[in-house]
Length: 370
Image (cartoon, rainbow, N blue to C red; front, side, top):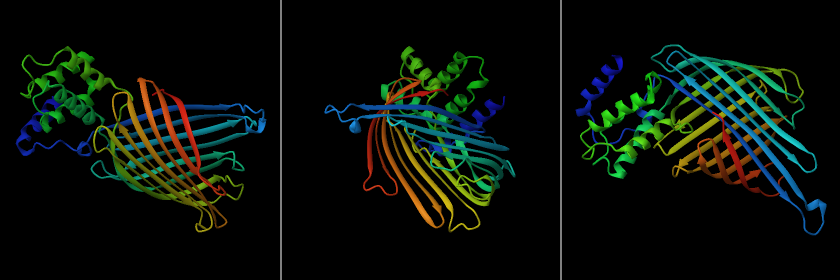
């Protein structure tokens, strides 16, 4: 009943729309629940043909990257975990572990202001010991899952390109499709959902004579069921205080000043831009602090190929001496099946005391578990 009323209201607004496609970030879902778990493994081996053991190379790298984002009008939470481990032929182990979790409660379901509390954990082979802090503060902003509209737009593009539609669907029809796709869990079966989606498309008056065929329905099913595809938009800005239960440098526990921002933009179903940044430091903030900034851009080239460009900057300042790390990477990801990827990438990194940028070309295998 409620869904029928919403569809009726959308249809009543049809005359107010122009023929311009709906920007993905204009879509608002009452619930955002996104998660991603990725495993990375790469290995490089080189045996010097001249017998010089010092020139032999045997290096392996293993990584885990997990992100969970949940948001409803009353509250939300986010969890992230990243672990990178490198083992070389000299039995040298280098690792970095970062884990963050935050819970936020909105002051009003109609507004985007919230209070939050959370914890941060940092560990590295270069630290003296584990770093752990608890945080609380206030912020503003909200994220929205626009995946249902992105999938509806991809369905529309496919049908129009194949000739099953004489023109692209009206924005109101796209909104209705997104509503139904976003409510997939409420249907008794996938067949029931497909029946409703087929009805909406064929009632648009743009479908070729004879209606959608079996291939159209098959492709629509693949778009709806695609697990590794997600798009979201929004931003948030947080400021607060933290208390350092464990200092990774081995010093005294300190009160911390904290700040963070997140930004996501999906201009089209094929593209996703993400920006993240954080800042923390004790009362002597000019002498000791940490800054992290990361930006990434994903582009969906085809059903089997996508590209990702990433830049990250990290600065740790101890006793007024900054230590900067720059990292850039470009990856092309081939997905022969839904749960496994083959990645060809180029990465560049610059650390203190490097005389030049390090350059790595890698071929890696990834598995998506969620």
